[in-house]
Length: 239
Image 1 (cartoon, rainbow, N blue to C red):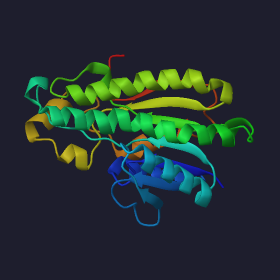
Image 2 (cartoon, helix red, strand yellow; image 1 turned 60 degrees about the vertical axis):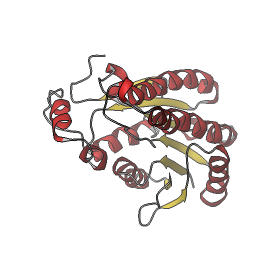
Image 3 (spheres, one colour; image 1 turned 120 degrees about the vertical axis):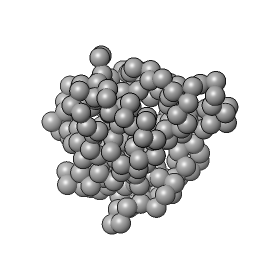
Image 4 (cartoon, helix red, strand yellow; image 1 turned 90 degrees about the vertical axis):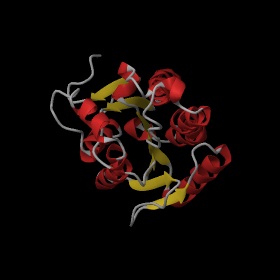
């Protein structure tokens, strides 16, 4: 029995990923400040609290088997405004959840994943996926804290991939464009139209499409990609 932990599991993307990983044979586990989706194991977790993360990692190991897959997905968009117009507390909040929270999650889980992987052959050693954003690649205007956090995740993934390569644990990033759902619905109409106009495919991404990419990255089929960034931008990204 192997667990797949998804932070931010109560959101649209998180729920889609949890469902897809259950189909792939994992025990899906949600870590979120909100209750887990119906029928899914989970803990109420604040990803900015290292002690809570450590407790959730220990409980997940004890109840659901070793964590073989980790999807670092928890995040908030923050205000849509120019950087100097954003209250400092909001800048700190976005960076704390989207970047610091991701690093603290990795800090809590990686030692356990390494220990379990040392006793497992081949692909079972572990897979980590960080949820980036095309905004971290392009530096979208009126999203500086969010873009900075997501760019930081890409850099962290490349560092961690090098550190974990000897352990056979692969670390990759997915960079979606706007995903249809609650976060997208919170954007005002003008901003939504602006972002949609940037996508050559002419639509927003579906949560299930993100889940399919994640499912491949944590599967035995993914054997040689690590430290990579996988674009889900509908043609929006230029690199």
